[in-house]
Image (cartoon, rainbow, N blue to C red):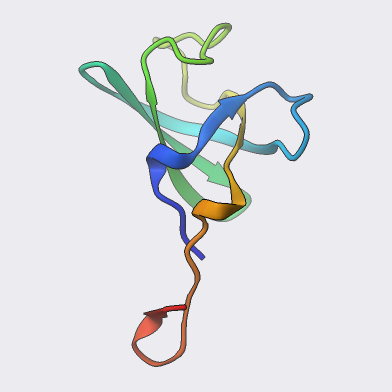
Length: 87
């Protein structure tokens, strides 16, 4: 399963369907910030505009903070079979 980083949205803990991760580190990329997040043993990247739903997060101390996110099911890509073909 895969999802593009720009299709993941930071949200509140109380948002229906919200998933929880821990920020491993962040990268300022001009008008965007790339959040490298661990969810259990998996890693993902969230690409978001600076300031978008990031109230309460400290950019200087973003690592090791819990973060909640969601994404539309319509943007999930499934892979499988020989050669990891897109399904």
